[in-house]
Amino acid sequence: MSTLLPSKNLLPGGERTAVTEADNFGRPLRNLRLSVTDRCNLRCAYCMPEEEYTWLPSRDILSFEEISSLVDVFCGFGVDKVRLTGGEPLLRRELHRLVRLLSEKPPLKDLAITTNGLLLSEQAAALKSSGLHRVTVSLDTLKRDRFLALTRRDALSGALEGVEAALRAGFAPLKLDAVIIRGTNDDELFDLLEYARERRAEIRFIEYMDVGGATRWSPEQVVPREELLARLEQRYGQIEPLPERTSAPAERFSLRDGTVFGIIASTTAPFCGSCDRSRLTADGIWYLCLYAAGGTDLKHPLRNGAGPKELRELLSRTWTMRTDRGAEQRLSMRDKRQALLGQDALRGNPHLEMHTRGG
Image 1 (spheres, rainbow, N blue to C red):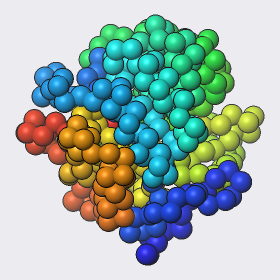
Image 2: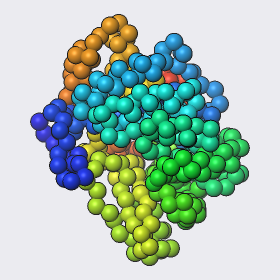
Image 3: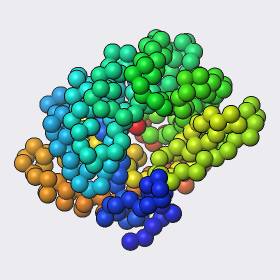
Image 4: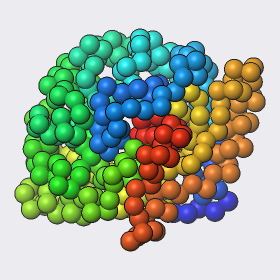
């Protein structure tokens, strides 16, 4: 079995993970991004630029018990990290019940959620008491008019209140994700970093990606990692990289005063060689790469009576054949690169949408 790039799949102490099966490039499966709904209460330009969508039928959405059963199978395969996503995951009714089911599984060492924060003021305390470990809030701007333009909703105050609610509930350190788009919000780098620093949160700047609903993406709108670092260094002085022994997508850096921030450079410096994550949609389709055109149906085998052993074998057959290097392949296109998909393609297959398979 060959290895594409040196693997970062190490535990904090430097030990290798205990998974016995890996894909064609030696990458184990440890990290599952679990979408619980394809619905969202925002329409972010880089994810859901339109108002009308083809939604997944409610009868196809996995129940909490079905999700829990599938997570057991994934844990048996080596997964020890689960992140709840959407759409907007907090739109799923009584999500804290699912959190409780998952938090009681001993193999899961990390249970997190990514949310736009609008419903956190109502749910943060219940999520914390149910066993959720970590929260990441997506926050691309601190300007009300810009938030409205980016998301088509006048809801910045709700997002900011969600951040405060997460902090009050004890989610620390809180993480904030900001997709940086040239000409849209790249003038807010310092403001966003200061906002995070004041709350002892860690902000992660994300390069604009050409996936799913980013139908208006163009290379010119990407602010690359090197430029982000140069701008920040010009303002704050010397920036030190922090060594990482995990497969986390963010590179982490420290300012002179100890403030830590991250950069996720999926577009210009992809990390396919150490990618140990996959995605399960709310209706049970398993994707091995964010750029993958197709996935593996786990819902129908589960509902047709497949047991843990059969499902485990299905995971094994699928993962060990994995050759996905989507971000690297996109990078190799260079001058020919444009948005991955158009709106017509997305309308024909809602599973291609970012809000369906989770970011």
